Structures are given as C-alpha cells and as structure tokens.
Amino acid sequence: MTLESILLNGLAVITTGLIVGAIFSLVAAGVTIMYGTIWFPNAANGQFFMLAALLMWSLVVSWGLPPFVGAVVVIVGSIPFSLVLEKFLIRPFYNVPNRNIVYFIMTLGLAQIFAGVFTGTYGRWSDQYSLPAAWPGAIMLGPFPFPR
Image (tube, rainbow, N blue to C red; front, side):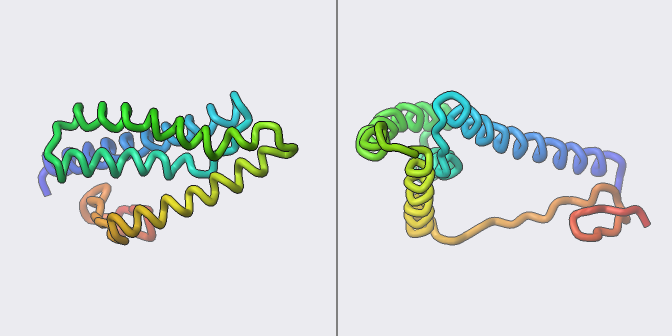
C-alpha cells in the first residue's frame, strides 16, 4: 500500500464519520428541540427523518431530479404532511391529563407504522460496505484496529 492510498483511506474514514455524526446530531437536535421546548416526547423522530431521506432518494434516483430540487420538494411536501398529522393525531390530546405518555405511545405506534410502510415499499435490504483498515497490516478485533 502506498502512502497516497493510506491517506485517501484515512480521509474516507474521517469524512464518513463526520457525515454520519452530522446525521445523528440532526436527529438528536430534533428530539431535544421537540421535548425541550414543547414537552412533546416524539418516538417517531427518526422515522420522520428516514421518511424524508427515502423520499429524497426516490426523487433523485428514480425520478432523476437534481438533489437540490428533490430537497426542496421534500421540505415543501413535509409541511402539509406535518400539519395533517398535528391536526388529526396530536390536537385531540391537547387537554388530556398525562398527555406526554399519550404522545409517546402514539408516536411509537406511528414509528411502527412507518417502519412497516418503508419495509413494504423499499424492502428489507441493506448495502454493507467494509471500511478500510486504519493502517496496513492492522489486526481487527471487533471494530478496533490494532497494529501487528
């Protein structure tokens, strides 16, 4: 292995880690904002994120839209979807005692519905990629690389 390939592999690992970390931080920020500001425990926050991601992927890959246009379509389309969910699922429970438990159970059920719809629509597939070793000749013990 050349020094150039080692540096490129290291850069790929760092970039992938930063992207995945940014995605996780967006989902965590959504949970924090929802619960911290309006005391709404949303168990389906990740499913809403996955809905937007899969819709964006479908628009770009299947329909051939440019990524920026797909993002705008997903953002604009999420507004009426969110308003309908709020009106029919959340608003009826505004004056219920212990509504946080009701909200949590409701969004947990919504997450299961979304998971079933996503599995039925997109299937149970996953692309698995092996990450390059942190350095050549490393021994991998689980997810941890150790030099020889």
